Length: 525
Image (cartoon, rainbow, N blue to C red; front, side, top):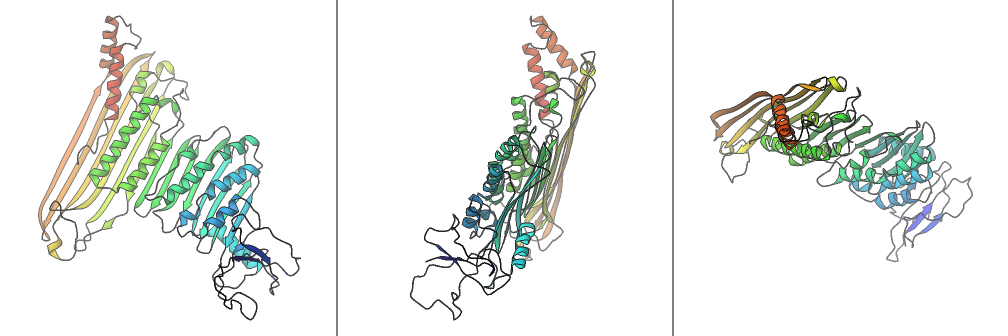
């Protein structure tokens, strides 16, 4: 039968301890005094089921070859404690945190108080002293090999920090509150983050990993001012993650075994946001561009998918168009000149790999950056809007020379049949519109892009050819005349000159299509 023993200081009287909820019903709990005068407050030992009648005890009355004692930080019985007990034997670091983030956050939301729990299983059978155990517990909470944390700041000034930690010898969960006590509305808002917190944790350990951050972006900003999520994991595809969201921005930075990504979305200027349909169309257009860039540069698909996950999340539920800080309200024509998305900057890069031992200077790389920035100036009748989009792609990769054959480069010249590609692309585009006394005085689109693809072909280790394929595009056009012609057409058809006629609507829809297609830096492979 499995047994739990609890050792207490000699000066403490022994009392019955109720088993924690994670302990099997058949397990008994035995309080046993120890000869150590400086001992931990609670040491719980989980033995093994006895199936044979053999001498299991040493001359000192202890179980021979017993597993190390499980030492709990406290004997509190709740969902956090039972989840820790259930997850302790999980080998995968992320699996150890299964359900634990949600349990800890829910525990806090229900109590409003700080809480700390951990379990340790030190190597060897020696029972550490109380001071040594306290140091081990502190190290587990603050310096563990694997850790995730969620920091929530409230409008009243309180800060809640929830942390999960895992090491080879232990598992812990802790929540601390500083700067005051949360009120009921703040506790309610915090509780709504439980599923999002757990989903973000689960995404880190998924195969392939996912950036499940949407549940952490949707919070009441009048009650909670910011939410920050961080993770440090050893031996995981995602090694570090740092996420932050507040009223002004959403950002994430990830380092991983394959590569890194960074994304920041500025959520302050809601005036530039398009309607739901425009935002959805712009988002899908960008996702398609990312796929094209990955295909052209032979980037890692899983890393790009994480990048797309973050981009989709950060550009969803941003808000609806409102007046600019200057008081101007943008018209349908203005929105047609814009993508419809919030401003952002993003980058994705893979770790360089040297896959050809005969030519170590030929490395496989992939780096992609993309951004959007918008400036809106002036009051309503004399406003101007200018939006810039930029993108760069730098990549290199090896490809087998003959279709259907694998790439297996060695020092043997017979293996050296391949083409080494180098990609260097860049593009920029802009759209601008300006008014004077509510009349359009200029409206223009411009685009420029440069593409370069160099192919170095080797046969039996000898360079056979070097071919560079360049492509350049530069164009600009005024759309003011197009808009005016559409207004005249609608007026002649009896729709007036308010800009609500079919010709004008078709014109601004066409302009928006041109805006979205202006950044084609990877339209062919």
